Image (cartoon, rainbow, N blue to C red):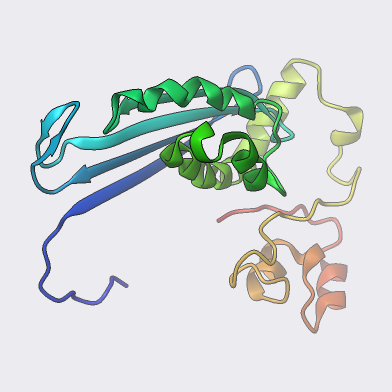
Length: 217
């Protein structure tokens, strides 16, 4: 269902945020984000001259390389377009994120390392959707299949993981993070029954014994 028809108005600005997740042939994960800003009208810029309508005021990207524990093992940040010549000078400092794990406290630690004058506002903002894209990428059934194949090929798959029933299922990170994924709701009841807490939880969990959880969405 689209938004309701707007009142008469004039388009002034467009911001686009694009994030993508990739499984690498070396078993690591690349999560990339790009943020762009553009005006719908010509306007002057002291450094770049007149920017035409549609020219990027900001065009900045970052790539986080993660291991299977969501620990950042490498970072690359670039500034292709900016309103000030000095903006791109700070991008090497995003290497400070190496060693940080995406999880609880991630954004707090990002601000500690790269907040204020120690980072770029736009790239730091971009790390929010990049982090959630990491979870969306790694949590899918396809991602788990690719990861498993890679570890089998390289002989790094622990014996305990060769059997689906070797250990209990892990709680999906999305539970109780939004309305749809309430632990008492139908989505959790269907896709993560081991962690369902609705009124018929005991019966649901009993019926789900031995069922592998598949996380989508």
